[in-house]
Length: 567
Image (cartoon, rainbow, N blue to C red):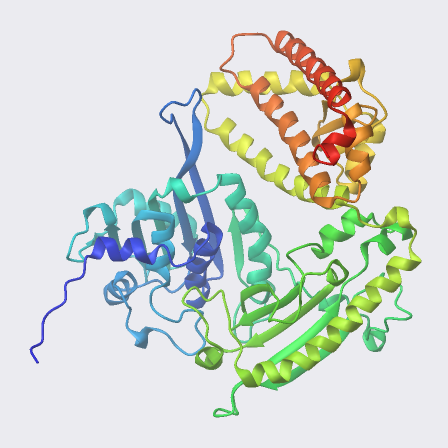
């Protein structure tokens, strides 16, 4: 049998590496892993944007221009930089405590974000070297540029290091715009997730490691423990579902060891489970609102379950582990499974270090404990829900308003980025229009209070002028809300009849807010030569016509025909 030399198309290989399952935020944080793994105490993430005119579009769009991850870790010499940029890095460069695993993280993560990767690094603060891979220039051979950093790059790096003698800049350009969300969304997810993901490092709780400072968009990220163990009060910290007042964090399962391998008995994991507060109970107490409680403890859909940490770094967010099914009565259920890299092969950690599959032994040990903990959590939540008045319970409006409030934060960030990238004259025009819009449609004190206490960005009111269905209002600090006319025939005869249809309620609230937001963005855009007052008048007339036509249609068709599909 003859041996033949296989050919590898480096460009296609890099493209494939970028499609192994990264989201933009997970890719960036995987690169941050490298900084943490090599001793960084200061890390900064920047997402830079630019405006482009898409073919056929009427206005410019702000898109990502580059991602930059800076650190003051140990840096790399020529051999280490070759290894970092090379495919399938040498395993000798990773110790048993590292967050890295396969030697593909930098290449695969950066490739999912963009086609050009540049690494600038120094080990002594004197010699600065640079490696650069441009996928557009790759063919069958894997080649990259290597050499000294430029004077400007050295100057920028020294400014960041501020006394440190080593560090690295990772710069990703030529972004994959077709697969990237907005800059605001990327930054929001990075801020929301990184405090949980690097909780132990950001709070200085990793043995033999200094505390890490992580900056994202000039925002210092605080460590966030999803289990809130530090809030558990002393010996009276165990959950009694019958007597729990819903106000405090309790232990459901105190930390305990489980074995994850029969062949390797030294492979152990730690499991611990807590019960977070019951937001309606907290809201009724007056200490804080239910919305503030949900925000503080990150209580809601997608956040309850098991948080799996590997080497003090989160690798699986709110996993079900085939036990914790979707159930609103589990909103306060939080577990943590803590493992080390010696369990990787046993537990089957994937290349993105974001998914885990339990061994049969680990599952057999963990499932009974999780099942009992889940039962106690559900029981505790249900008891509190029965005790608290119905008016304080969550509704579809509550759930979707919380979600809209969070997304609106991203949208406001996107607006600010758009504004920052505009020309000086355009900035002035945008700010003047925004100010006029906000002053012309102010919120009432009652509306402001509802946003402050319950995140109510969509508010149902008794009536609106000329039977309009919706209307914008603005608060200088809290942003835009939308009023919905409860007296309109659509709400009164169709929507209210479907008040138990959570999907419909959420869809309509989202639609109303989206229409109002679209009006706002249209109006403050400086591309129009029409005055704000004139355009506001046109939109007022438009809403009046829409409200009138909808009311007439429902009257003619009949609400019963709409709800029953014509039967």
